[in-house]
Amino acid sequence: MVVMRRFVEALAVVLAFSAGVALAQAPVPGITGSQLTTRFKQATGDKLILNRKSTYPGHYKAYDVGVPTIARKGKYGTFTVYLVTGTDVEAEVTDLLADGHTGMLGTPGAGNIYWELGKTIYGDDYWLAKRRYGGNIVLWWIGSKPVKKTDLTWKRLHTALTKATR
Image 1 (cartoon, helix red, strand yellow):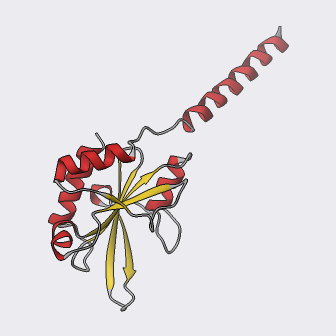
Image 2 (cartoon, rainbow, N blue to C red):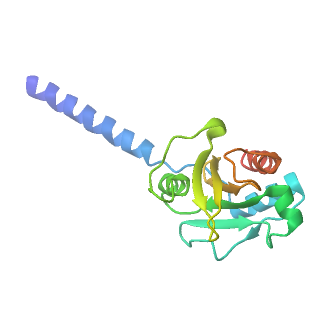
Image 3 (tube, helix red, strand yellow):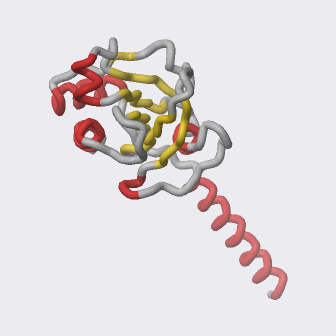
């Protein structure tokens, strides 16, 4: 009787562990490239374009609004929207949000924004804001001023991506 009880308890532990692993590896719901571009255009009137140079096949697709004209930079700042397409969405999203210098995922600030200080090729400082939207979208944004603060250009993107990932 004791042997049977221990067997049942051990089986219950194994099943609980297996269920926990299965839940932890469950795919994160996300949107497709077509849904992203269509919803962004509906929200902003502007078209997101696939940036093949910044895309990493099998991991993520990178989108922006194309040639960075003065008008587009004035409207959105400098940004890239990453659509994670890999099989391990959580790991890919974490990699995109992690600090590019240390590889570590820090603690997000206000608005769930991860901030990273960088330097241009001219030695000027800039702040890169990173934020997750929905299951598989990550925004990278640089404002027009080298300050760790969002502005109206961020708000436009934030509003559009919030609507696009609902």
